[in-house]
Image (cartoon, rainbow, N blue to C red; front, side):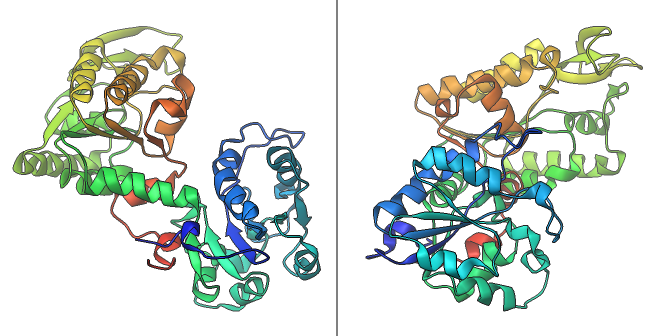
Amino acid sequence: MKKSIKDLGDIKGKRALVRVDVNVPLDENKNVTDDTRIQAIVPTVNFLTEKGAKVILMAHLGRPKGERNMEFSLAPVAKYMTKVFGQEIVFIPSVEEAAPYVEKLQDGQIALLENIRFYKAEEAKDDDMTFANEIAKLGDFYVNDAFGAAHRNHTSTAKLAKVVKPAVSGLLMEKEIRCLSQALDNPTRPFTAIVGGAKVSSKIGVLENLLDKVDNMIIGGGMAYTFVKANGGKIGNSICEDDQIETAKAIEAKAAAKGVKLVMATDVLVADDFSGNGTNKFVKINEIPDGFEGVDAGEDSRKAFADVIKSSKTILMNGPVGAFENPKFAEGTKAVLAAVVEATKNGATSVIGGGDSVSAAKKFFKAEDFTHVSTGGGASLEFIEGKVLPGVAALDEV
């Protein structure tokens, strides 16, 4: 158990160094087009300001690769956050110039430091603590609320926690760890995982770790065709990783040995043009004609997936079951999500575990329809794989 900001005592007048994830999309006029990540940090920031702390936020935007590229400046984000928090956000242009800005902060005031990835030392893969020690002078305690960056062993996500004490989690980080851990380590059964996406290779760790924990595993999306080919099926022009066929066989064997029910599509929607403007038709998944590729779960498969989901008490979804970005290929993913929503209404715990499944969940439903929608992409994936996240490991234990 990691300490959280709720474990801190009197913090009035103390300087809080808070790592957040506000890596939000901006349009060509530098306007924020989706503020989900900003809204996600509001509870933590408000908790700190209401207790009279001086809050110094650290964050990144995009990938400036250690260069001071103003295309990636956080200034427009600071301007937007002024509206969200109802107070002017003090924008600090650099770490070197930060001290006078921090000194002038009043209790309960918020500052945002310029893009921390403007510094090569932020992402340096070494044990040099010079940059961490420089930032450490600005704060009295450290808070990590950036679950989306917790899998990075960077200065602001991990090294700082070693030199600024106490080092605790924010409310978002705490919720992410609690919800994902509860699903993985202490699930109410039956526990069903839905694993989708294009490639088996990117989900081997997820599949391996989950087979030790789940009762049912639904495998969908592009990765399913590698399993079909492994069993001698015809997959036409569908995506397939020939070098992962033995992996697919091993996963099937492990599932059988563990008594895990593997649920695969039996029919699929295929297309001869990925744009969806050609011929689209339903076929058996192991009889896909040449010139066609699988793009979505078929009608029978959707029903089979939904039946398993609705009978589950814990559901973890990591990846869509079709190319949902195209409305013509979205019905399978939509049906799976609808079943998850229904199960949640009936008392199941549902966790949407990062990446494309989050995009799909938000596209077709609301975040409130699920128990938890993770804010982490790579971080969620690595957590589900059972890996240690450096940004979490560095925090103080209770």
